Image (tube, rainbow, N blue to C red; front, side, top):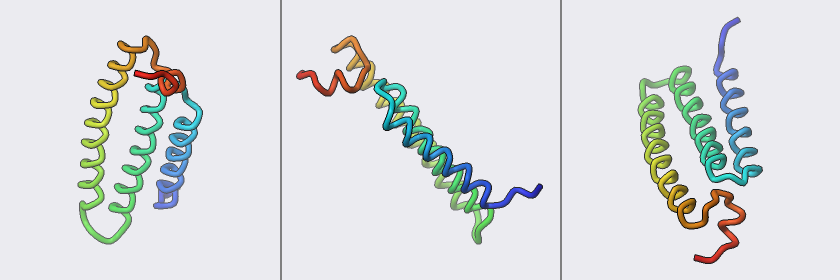
Length: 102
């Protein structure tokens, strides 16, 4: 079986939908961050696949590396915020935190 661009786009679509479902259903802040990471990984799969099967060179790969660096920086900042919220409220439940006043 030959792997085509359609297979990669289908995989990226599945990852994107799973990330959206995770964002919509999770109450835990760590789970929400995992959903964001799934969405970013879906975009990386699309970037690399279109770079591989499209006309051009390594542009998609370069953008994918930038997205990975952005995701790493976003994860560090978000985990620092989650840690500060946990120290203040003693919970990482985003519904409970959003209803509390500082």
